[in-house]
Image (cartoon, rainbow, N blue to C red):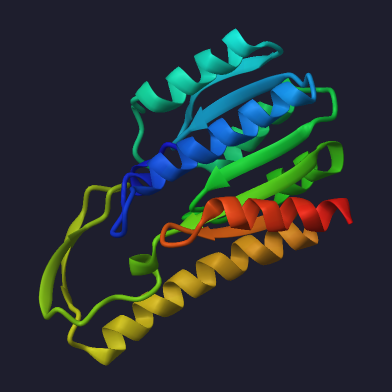
Length: 206
């Protein structure tokens, strides 16, 4: 996910930087298994697709793209990305979807992918997306639409609505993946993604 909302972070790194690191870890781990690796960048459209191949040089190319890629779109259209992926990859594979999943209505496309592939959703969030601090009146900008608005963070109602919106979005993600028979991992920018991934893969191997 290279949409506008991935370029956000209030702790040590922005979400897109952590997503890049996770992609790199997954890609390099595939070398030990002699697996092919590919990547699909998406925003509100499919930005770029690098077909799966083997080899260190191919992995290094993917890493360079992950670091240097500049998306054209700002929004998020997960359905289009999943449909594109389903059309270009026919053989069963392990598929990781890395995103903050700030979108909905992708259940049907996800279910189709999950029937064919071993699907894992990696949900990344920043703590400030779940809990709005009380800092008075602020001007906020939606990175995906470009719209700006004034928020009274001193209002308990505003902070609660903000929290509920995040929870509803995450619960949709979680329930959608579970109903589709897919796995998922929840990671926050203020936590170790290494520990989260190790715990996840240990659980899968048991």
